[in-house]
Image (cartoon, rainbow, N blue to C red; front, side, top):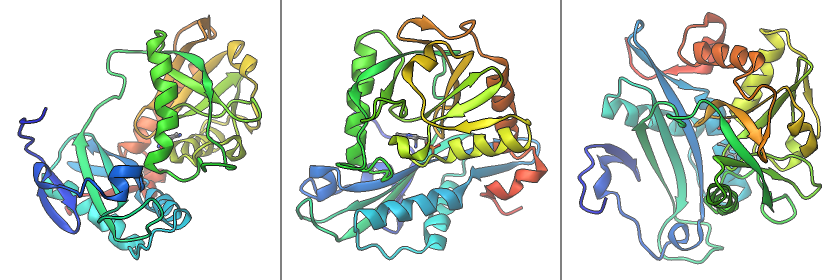
Length: 309
Ligand code: PMP
């Protein structure tokens, strides 16, 4: 990868430049200690409308501001600026396809882990279809690693350092032949995946752990809860989930901006339901993809069009 030229533009410290020219100080707090907060966004291309839609941009920016606040970064970015900068860099790349976008606010300069400035930002969009391209559903394990919790490192802060917990869980899972992992929290109840939330279906009811289960305040999760209740007429329970409920669930799926909605076929090698994508998972997934692509009028307010038409 070292010498590979990437023909892509990045938003970096207020300028739009080729990605290979975006460089930081190796002694910066972001480089040394993971002192950064970020968002992972997605935008979807609608061919018939000739438009690219960023999904729930204000919500992502709102969560980024909360992360900045909780880590006490001296950032003065306005919501409008944070949103417009995302639009600007996607436009600059002239993307006409689905993409993921990383928006990262970081501590630059030469400082310690307790520095609060200088605060800088980069925004890097990248063309991306499905996250799991070759897999219809996941075989996951219950991680032997516990999810970080509010007593030590808040899972509500979407910061780089938190992903070292995700890393441990993912590497262990992969090493043991699984696609991904589900963490339990300090109470021993189901928390989330390394980069996604967890839903299960039992007797037609959709169930997901609460925000107090050491999970990220996921935008996909709240989208699914809303559409399941309001459009699919499903009962949704937000409550603590024990791991053995996953083994005997009718359906399990993981959800997140990057992974979107992906069925879980087995947990700890125990087959979930029929070991195929379940009916309710399919319904949620189908509506989700219509919404994000701009084909559901009612939810157009969740979309920010990138191009001026
Ligand atoms: N949990 C974790 C740990 C994540 O990294 C993500 C991905 N951002 C999620 C849940 C899902 O959050 P969202 O739906 O906002 O992408």
